[in-house]
Length: 288
Image (cartoon, rainbow, N blue to C red; front, side):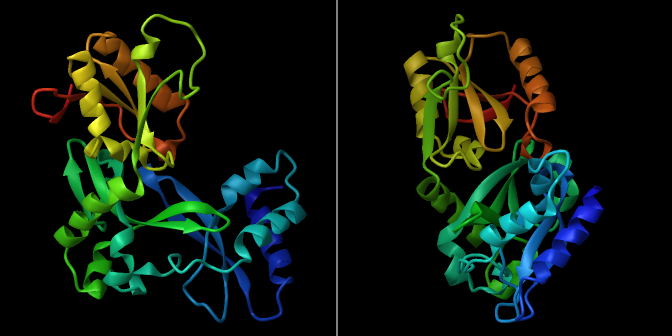
């Protein structure tokens, strides 16, 4: 079964489950790094513009080589046929007062998102962009974000700096940083020299955790502990690896990062291939 046939079959089956005019809709969504996915949502007559999304490519792949449309229908109804959290939906229609305490920053690579960034609220961070987003917690589909477009500012009667200032203040509160060794994070098992000097910096949700480098007190503490600058490897948009400078050759670390990003990290989760340095002397972050 092709993906397109799968979508048509599932839509027909889901629509038949409702008698009140609720229908399954699909929309193309461009995610981080230009990855395009098919979002599925239930359009309800009594709640226009408010919905939760399920990505159909993930559903299709999860069901194996011979995807069963009936299983997809059950999954969609379980995930989407629920009360929509008030934070989810057409957030551009909400007021600034309703969303200002949920605004956070998410780091993405600038080069691969250059066109998409033209319509978003963000600030430059080296070769990255800290994008302002609204954080929400769906009851069934989990934690998610809605990126803030420049068009939302007019409706909210606010400006770019007000939004970014709120995001800088909220992110450490809503997504507190965490720091673990690679071994503690259960990412490696090998007993190799130097591995205990590799640390994973993220947040308590491991969601958009690379942004923790923007407010990390733990990284500063790590630099003081070792008495060295800290190298930062952005292994995804959700976490970074911290290495006291001198523990490994920089060239080796750069090649390892490039290899991981190319082979092991989903394209939409890749941040950059750059290695960064946190300077112990003044707390500045630079590209190595």
